[in-house]
Image (cartoon, rainbow, N blue to C red):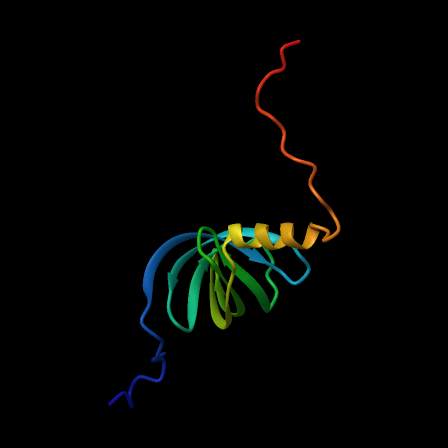
Length: 122
């Protein structure tokens, strides 16, 4: 059916977005960007052409509870195409704080009571 069109590129259906995101390189460098569209297999990201990007990096969408490991597919000016290699869920912020508090509390520690909220008579 498509014998004549050698430039045809099949890709997954994409949904337009305007998500604010952070690119995090394996060196720990964070670069602000925005996700223009996304599919099950990849995304198009807006990032300044002056920012060098490695072949593989992490992509965190602000306000969402997931992070993706992506690989660079193409780059044209201020736009980058990436393949999603791995998708990970992040624990909600409240649960992470509770886990940290539980680890920090020593089993031998005993509270001596609570502070009173009343002001003394002095």
